[in-house]
Length: 54
Image 1 (tube, rainbow, N blue to C red):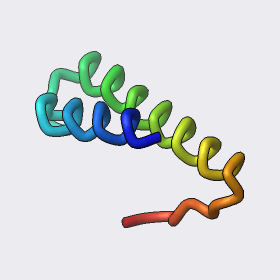
Image 2 (spheres, rainbow, N blue to C red; image 1 turned 90 degrees about the vertical axis):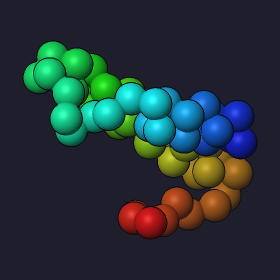
Image 3 (spheres, rainbow, N blue to C red; image 1 turned 90 degrees about the horizontal axis):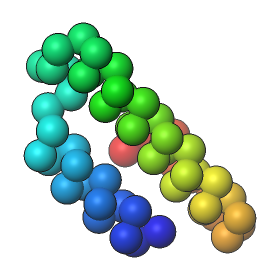
Image 4 (cartoon, rainbow, N blue to C red; image 1 turned 45 degrees about the horizontal axis):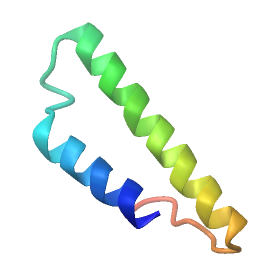
C-alpha cells in the first residue's frame, strides 16, 4: 500500500492533470480513479475504513 501511495504521489507531482489536453486529462483521471479504487479496496481488505476526502 505504501509503494502504491508513493508511486501515485510521484505521478501526481510530475503530471499536471487539469491543465492537460483533453485526451491526456482523461487518461490521467483514469489513473487517479484506478489508484483510488486499489487503495480503498486494499484498506477494506485490511478492515480499515478509507476517508471520503482528505
